[in-house]
Length: 283
Image (cartoon, rainbow, N blue to C red; front, side, top):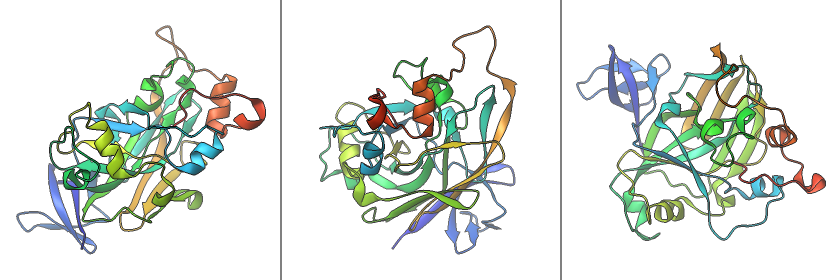
C-alpha cells in the first residue's frame, strides 16, 4: 500500500498534506483540490546528488563503454522548483535539455550502510526533471555546475510516495503531449538501493536528501513555451513549463554560452559512434 504526501502553499504557509484522491488534506483537516493547489517541491533536501549514466539506453545512445561503478554530480538546492512551476531558460542560452528521472528521498540518516540495508533508509520516491543547460558544457570542465546547477533546473514532484516498489516501473517524458523518452527501471545498470549505499560510503545522507537515478535515451532541447511532463507508474505526473529568463547571462563577466561541436552533439543526442567523439560525463 502506498501513501502520497505533497507540500503546498496553504493560505500562504508551506504545508505537508496527504493526497486523498483528487483532494489534499492538511494535518488540521483543511482540504484543497490537488489540481488547483500551489505545489512546492515535496521535500527540502540538504543536498541533491545525481548519477551521470545509469539507463542502458543512455549508455548506448552515447556509445559509452560500460562502467564498473557509477559516477555522480551535485545540483544545488536552489535548482528546485515544484509541480506546475516554471523552468527558466536564461536569456542568451539555447540548449536546455529535459531528462525525466525517478528520485529517491532519504528518510533516515545513512552512512556506511549495505545495499541490503538501503531500503530501510529510503522514505519514498518522487519524479524529477534533471534539466541541463548545455550552453555551458565547454566551460564547466566536467564539474557540471552551471550545466546542471542553474536556478529552476530540478523540478521535483508532484508528491512523495511512500511504500512504492521501484521494480519494473515505466518512466516516460512528454513534451507538449508527445512521448519523447521512455524506459523502465529494469534497464538501470545500478538500482536505487545500490546507489544509496554507494553514496553513503563517503557522504552522510540526511532525511529529505534527494538522489536522482538517471534518465533514458533521447534527452533533447526544449524551448520557451514548451510543457514537459514526467510520469511513472504510481508516482503521478510532474508538469512544468519553460519560460525565458528576464536577465541575459551574456556580458562582460565569466564564461559565455558556446555552441561547440561537443555542446551541439550532446544537446542533440551524441552521434559519438560515427564521429569518434566521447563526452567526459554525459548526463
